[in-house]
Picture 1 (cartoon, helix red, strand yellow):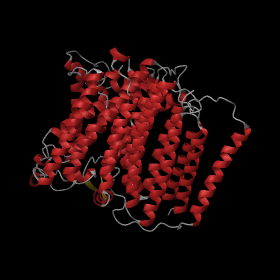
Picture 2 (tube, rainbow over the protein chains, first blue to last red):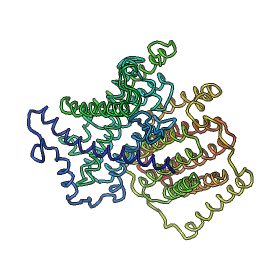
Picture 3 (cartoon, rainbow over the protein chains, first blue to last red):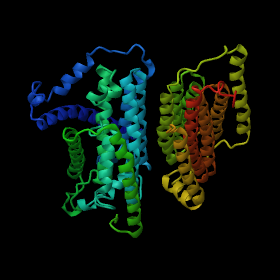
Picture 4 (cartoon, rainbow over the protein chains, first blue to last red):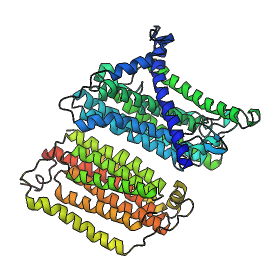
Length: 348
Length: 165
Length: 100
């Protein structure tokens, strides 16, 4: 019983934190893009426009609920929900803190400490394709269908380099359990998997594939405004569109969180153990803040790249995925396997 | 708790299988099949086979069903037409025959199997135990199936290509 | 704990539904999907027996069946596409003559 209550509490905390981060991200996106483009951005609603997400939320809720006449009702209504659910589920296996002791009980700060935790994250990412495909098809519109098919083809193409870079990390760590992978990256930051195996390459491949998976620039042609109106969410308005929006931000956060867990030491501080304070709430708070800080940096990076790098054309995008990233990730895997066999640069 | 999960998942899988078989629209059948595959993956996890359950979601529900959905959309398949009206005989005979068939198999299954699961050994169903077996005892079938996948890929690309004349 | 015979009953029911689908439906892709249903029913039986005999062998058989199903789905769908280009329909009642 107590275990169930603790799980519910963890789910409650993570869910609310994710939703809060999504609303903060809308503000961050608009302000950072404004700074990059040398303009003001939202600054009317509250100090520095900080209440803008609330205004956006009210706007979305009071919009008219339009359903296209010939749309397939069931899937049209199901698709936004179907996009949010896998995005949230993938976050369940990510450890966002060390094993803390609350009121005498040891609580590990991960919702699902599965033996095959990385497989769960990957499975949830794979299920996110359905929402895109169904939204595009059920809207009964040319732009939606083309956008939906292109988006989903892009997502499944980039699943391969993503999976292969994850496998390289699993080779180095010897386990599929995210909490163990984080535990192995303790100590000075040179122990992070970022530097192990073939340095930098695995992380680079994972990040690029992650950008393509979440349909963010430079890989967002399927939803670019000048090209396909808005791709698979053209025919959606109001709160349903907001659901797709939310799902995109949650996917961004899950992808970054996975990258942080695998390559950048998760909640580890990156300083030698002798410099860290003694285990207690001081250390644990620092570690949770370290995780949140790394996550925040990666969200900023997403926005930064979006407003700096030009968009790839769709055939360039698919070529990059199949002819560039896929062989490179295979090479990364082969090189990592050799390094593990000869025990070079893979000390755990 | 496990029993509730098992009953819910079993009901969901049978219900979605019935939707696959009866619905006119191929897209609805495909989505129902994806749902069925995910509920069967849940059943695998209830039976402690974690690795295979997660693989089922990744491979079956996440890749094969998306491929089937793509092909249905590519060919723009409409709802299945019925050339001649389905007679009462067929409409009654098909469900009855299905139930009889299921009962026939079920009776054999019921009489010849134990009624309790033994305790699972430690590390049952984890990736390491399945993987160890896969790369030692089943090494040759593993290599053979990778060859088979390459052959299937080449075959599928060749068959589906448009002729370049 | 769960009764293994109940799980095998579920597997039998899924298999019967799959057989009914293959025999009744007219669209080629829908028939392929019902074949996948039957394969999954078999996989469920395998996993049950793996748990009964407490060994990884049956799980590896499921692994192979899944991979084979993927290869078969890819090749089967390619055939359906080629057939559709030739005959303009995937209705198996319309493409039942080799040459007319």
